[in-house]
Length: 125
Image (cartoon, rainbow, N blue to C red):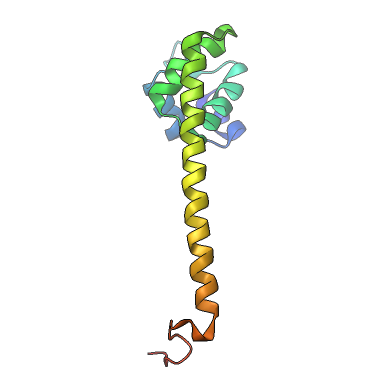
């Protein structure tokens, strides 16, 4: 399939697919006329790349993991990398939960008329 078809099938822009190619995350074949040609596995590859990006992994980290994905093996290095990324995501979740709790406290305080926010007494400008 050509790049436009891959973009349509995955919901990823042509520009993003070209970026994946620049980063060596997605390697197309080339036709005699130089057009990119992607095999059937390209849809799954793009979906995997998107999932890993959504999890916050960098292009470099994804590139380091792809050989293990392609060979369907996991190595101590790939497990360590995945565990490090999982720990990073867990820390982010914990930080977001703390921010949410602080926002909840501010919301609760602002709903109390005696809370001193003063919004109810102000006239709009």
